Amino acid sequence: MKRAPRVGVFGLLGSGNLGNDGSLEAVLGYLRAEHPDAVLTGLVGGPDIVRERYGVDTTPLHWNQAEYETASGLRSIVLKGFGKLVDIGRTAAWVREQDVVIVPGMGVLEATLPLRPWGFPYSLFLLSATGRLFGTKIALVSVGANHISARATRTLVRWAGRLAAYRSYRDDISRDAMRAMGVDTSRDEVYPDLAFSLPTPAADGPPGTVGVGVMAYYGGNDDRADGDRIYRHYVDTMNRFVAWLVDQGRPVRLFIGDQIDRQVVDEILEKTASPLVTAASAETLDELMHEMAAVDSVVATRYHNVLCALKVAKPTVAIGYARKNDVLMAEMGLDGFTQRAKTVDFDRLVEQFTELESRSPELRQILAERNENNVQRLKDQFAALSAALFGGAR
View (cartoon, one colour):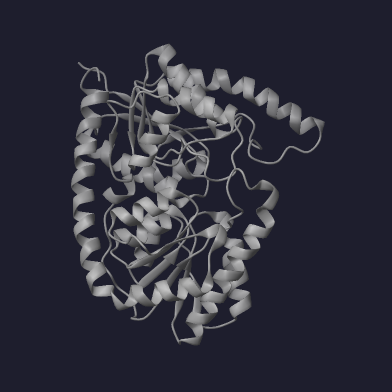
């Protein structure tokens, strides 16, 4: 009798980022539908949440549970260094038990937000290196990438990509970035973000409500020295925009994409002090989509906030922090309705939002058509993935 395949999922999953967990949901849905006999395990950032929410047997990604806290004092520095050594053996032991490991979506090959090389890039490199060592197929599925200026981070990301058995990207700029960093992408394909394969909820909510997705945004990897000023400008502008909506008599529903964003929601609620402004309490991407299905239009920052709005066919303005936001908007027919979070301009935002709403019926039709195409392309992706990982050599 043929042994059931052992399939692992890997990443900062269950750690509070709704987009990451949405990508996991999409991959688990595919595996349980197409490979129901697969034995699933995870090496993840939030093992308890992934185990309880998704029914996957999990192992913590790091031996040092304070891995992503800032080291203060000799003891914490020593523990972090020791943890890096311990994680080599832990990762190798887990990978050796798998036939296939899937890294589901996420921006695992990018540094658009503050990132240290010895954090997740190091973990991803260990995964790919031990996978190559033990013959375990490592698959980076519909992942995001960008060109990375920091040499150490770029080196780890490049080798993590090179050593993977399967790679696909969520947009052309991600594939181009990996090619520019020295990875042979000639056999790598581009597919939509995995979240487009999740079920789409029906629209159901009071008319006139505007969804506003906010983010605790401090700039990118090269903006650490200026992070506080960037954050203050962004939050003040979003506060001003929400106040403008309230002055128009519009109900506002606030969204987040990561638990850290709640600080921005709390500030807006306190500053506006209006019964027209409420906050969603979604804890999964599916719950977020249901919330967004109930509004008329959306202004959002985090990539997967924008994606959720587009998936439920809501006219959207993206206050993005990387080119991936612009590319996603253009692919979905909303080119021109974008701004940079670092330099977001209130007057231009009002103009964009006003035009967006005036073209709402036309844009909703465009989004519905693009969504149908994305669903079909992801079916093609999953078929290709099954052939590559479960049907023989790539």
